[in-house]
Image (cartoon, rainbow, N blue to C red):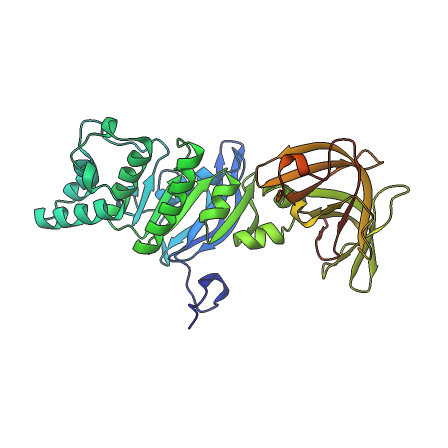
Length: 374
């Protein structure tokens, strides 16, 4: 039997754990969050993604109780949390700096919140052991923070945040201080821990790869608004605007004029260039100015004109980015526009078929491009 797909947001009977209802947050004249409505479900690993200053940290701070709401409501398990002080919310926040106590051991750092709640000693002992095991820190329990690595400190902060079994854990750029390799390992650890504990995680990040790796759903934000909320695959394959397409991964954007045809649009984009065809259910406005978003891996590069391809343009290789397993070819069209195509490097460098200044053909299918109105 296959496991049911985890998608509570598609089930009308599921009640959200967190509900933002028309939430606005102003600092003086500046609107940080603008009439935002969003549901987050239990056991989700939810990512808030966007450039610096887009409002993602403000949203998190309102959830934690460090910022008050100007307008609107935030519900946690159906209850309005506006008047609930931070220490009374079933929410814990893990800061980017980890904020560990330098003079306390790993064990005491994890036990800190439990001791403050005056729990019985044996309960504290059992819970700390459980957290040490979960984060694979048993060997380090007697060490102080300065005696362990950055990745281990990150796990101590995580263990301390989870020790009080919050319903919701907020993670503010939690992997920002780690190097790339350690970041990637830690992302998988975080996912594993989140799944084992069943705690709802909300992560703030400006790293698209991180959001796409860890999250069940991603909210792409800009200037205090949600631009799109969807699964990582949905955001990558079906962005709803040029902003989202461009923000996530590598993309070619072709601006043109769309004319409705049977199954989609024919898009003219430059004098002397063939019209491009894209299948879509999208309905463009009257003016029919539109954008085609095409991922480089969906563009085929060839030395000869491909037979029977729906969309074909010719250009000259202007640049080659060698990424080990892949090469990205930057191809300049006669119009001066650059399109990127990606090809897997199955051969050694000396045997590659294309090099700088080569004339090449780029082609893609009628379903490769997403047609966007803005």
